[in-house]
Amino acid sequence: MSASSYNVNPLAKYKLVFLGDQSVGKTSIITRFMYDTFDSTYQATIGIDFLSKTMYLEDRTVRLQLWDTAGQERFRSLIPSYIRDSSVAVVVYDITNRNSFQNTAKWIDDVRTERGTDVVIMLVGNKTDLSDRRQVSVEEGEGRAKEHDIMFIETSAKAGFNIKALFRKVASALPGMENTQLVKGNDNMVVELEEANKPAPADNTSTGCRC
Picture 1 (cartoon, rainbow, N blue to C red):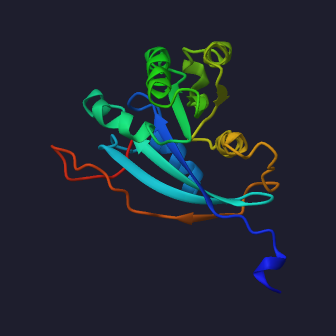
Picture 2: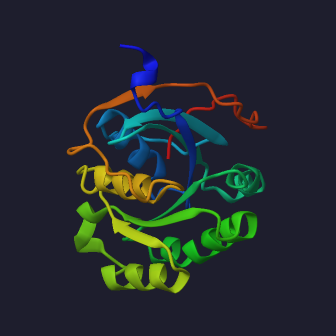
């Protein structure tokens, strides 16, 4: 059968940038999504790291480019350039760390400054496995999301809670995806690792993603 017999859609690429304070679990969320693993010994991300994953939807295939940013203040000057051409910004906070939640307003403002309203923003409250140490309620997270007219979800990268749901919600909200449904279960994905053109950190030669 010829290719013309199919409804062929080009492979759409969408850039997702992960933002948030240090140690809120950005790298852990990405690692859980990519490899379904969790490592409790992560070290801080140095600069920017990049991974790519292909997702098969009902009527098309999309490539999600996941950009993991460092949460430390000394790397803040690098981040706007990565936000600038992003389709999605995932702003993560730690539900056991109120300060990281308060700072989400700053991260959201950074995204709005660079992208205006032409971007999907997902607010993520991570570490629900530590609910006995919770400092930020679900209602507060929902309220912050409503205030900024963005999406919201709570997750646990450690337990794997809501990680697939997070990416399903993001994928369904991508530009041009309003009428597209994800394949049931969303488990048929191909992982492809790619090298990123990351700025070399001044004080460390490692570009490993650990936060």
